[in-house]
Length: 239
Ligand SMILES: Nc1ncnc2c1ncn2[C@@H]1O[C@H](COP(=O)(O)OP(=O)(O)OP(=O)(O)O)[C@@H](O)[C@H]1O
Ligand SMILES: [Mg+2]
Image 1 (cartoon, helix red, strand yellow):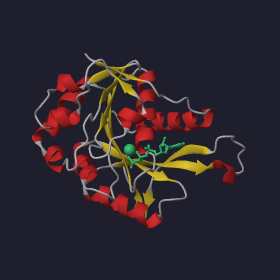
Image 2 (cartoon, helix red, strand yellow):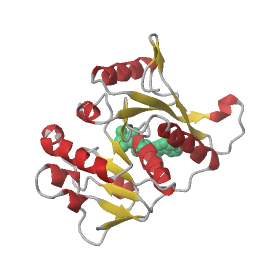
Image 3 (cartoon, rainbow, N blue to C red):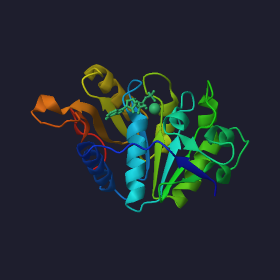
Image 4 (tube, rainbow, N blue to C red):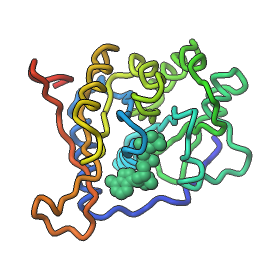
């Protein structure tokens, strides 16, 4: 298997990694059949890719075979941002969905033990047809048998329909909310979009919450909170 070396993996402050660890543990309690998880948000820049990557790393580190699939095919920044290094040209999900590569060509091992990745490699302006293809389903079906967890990074719900296309093929979704920025109405709209496609909302992540407002004295005030979304009908999502 080919390898991607991830050069820029930041060390997180204790409170951030602890909050993410709680998220990882909570997902473990979501049920044994919850293994293909989509990570999305309402608007750009809320922290989807950051949370996906860190969660994937933590899952791998505790011994789960974890696969990260980058499905932000229009605007993937992972390769540059995280500093992907490989011996040959990287091929990714777009190559596979377009019929130019096979599954074995696009799954990379990494320098994180048990951590595997399917990168984007080449951004495309309109991946809708690719996401609706039988090959996408086939990819998830095959990978489900090979990995304990599959984490799927997606574009925001409010911008394009990609995440809505991906959602029904997964076991559940996580909604990232950038604290203090994303309006409540916008978040509510995202929740109803996810509900409409029938994907369980496993939880919401309140990202970059300012802990100083809560009287804490962290030197690093961007952290995560993980919670369940309650609407007027009560609990929404899997117990
Ligand atoms: N909790 C955090 N603390 C500090 N920096 C963060 C945090 N979450 C995200 N960031 C930073 O904020 C920026 C946006 O995050 P990220 O790229 O993960 O967002 P995104 O939702 O994937 O964006 P896009 O919609 O463009 O895909 C990145 O530079 C990321 O490193
Ligand atoms: Mg992203």
